[in-house]
Length: 169
Image (cartoon, rainbow, N blue to C red):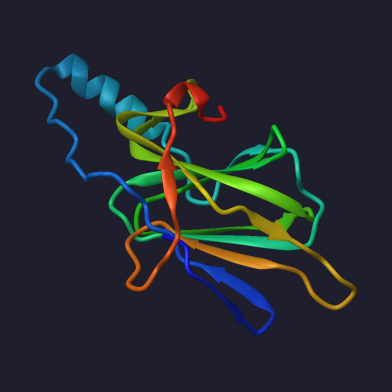
């Protein structure tokens, strides 16, 4: 759910991440443990930019992930993927150089992110917000959006599920 209000010139959005939380399955063989260890070692750092075609602006996107699942938030401008940021479970990350424009927000969450596939391999969930975020810069101000990827009391954001094949990769 998104809930918007102006606060000192910044628009805030609280976001509900839909999806169930499930613990990853325990490894049953030594080979599986080795594969899991390799995958865990490849887990991106919190706030890592996975894709960037919009840097150079003055807007800020702050993402709070209070859920128990890692997430990737992707901004799409028109039909072009603009930026993707990795946000670890129970962490906060920011992008401080978002260009002006209107963006559709997609997000995926899950366990065991594969850097080679650019996707979660364990219990992935794919969502899109029905409302768009608009970033605007003037001589004296710029837009700051905050997305919270866990349930927020009083939030009113609407999301819709996305077919994994339609998720911007």
